[in-house]
Length: 97
Image 1: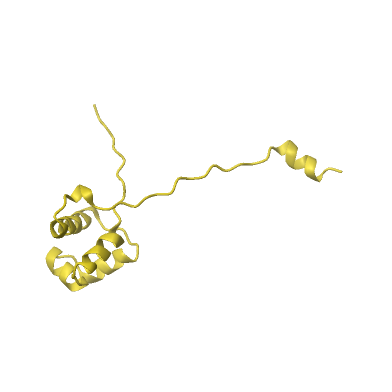
Image 2: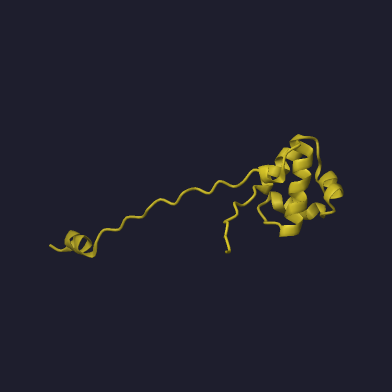
């Protein structure tokens, strides 16, 4: 039996902000993970990392904060609001006179 689980996206800009607040620089994050500094900077601006690099970065965050990688903050996606449309007959009656 195959079970599919929808993954919640990790909030990489928040991970970076938390590491900076803990005294890390982009250079030190790069040195600890082997990920180029420019790549980490791009994540802060919303670029999504590859799986392997993202996993490596989450492991750094977890080690620094003494947490499990599964505890990494995630992006809270807003719930979509339902859209309402007037029926065609109502739309026409507004303009028929």
